[in-house]
Image 1: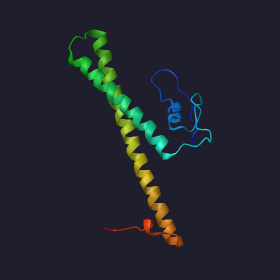
Image 2 (image 1 turned 45 degrees about the vertical axis):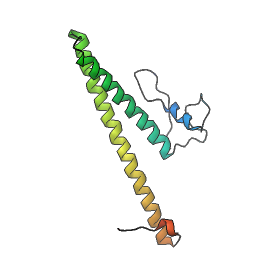
Image 3 (image 1 turned 45 degrees about the horizontal axis):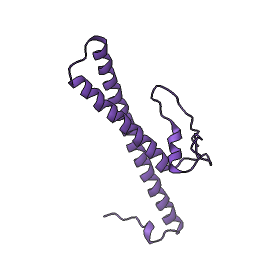
Image 4 (image 1 turned 90 degrees about the vertical axis):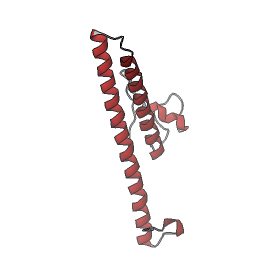
Length: 127
């Protein structure tokens, strides 16, 4: 079970966004039942990835203007590198979640077939 916690400052991920799916009160940091499903995880990860992609685009645009010098230029370059790194991390996590979810669905279907509980929708086709 995941125990979400609010992370304040520093652009950290806030698991309170899970509440947008309607499983908790707006002020609560986690769903009422304490469980987070695949959609919750994918939504949060995709939102975070998008936030960092947008941040990288903004930093890239600021650098392209050519008006920055000294410390401001170095800071913008670091911000761009960090945003691109974080976007890549969240993209990799999103792909991993999708692969695990797909594997879990396949495993569930195989178990049903083995038990003789499969219906027509559970057939595994090797086309």
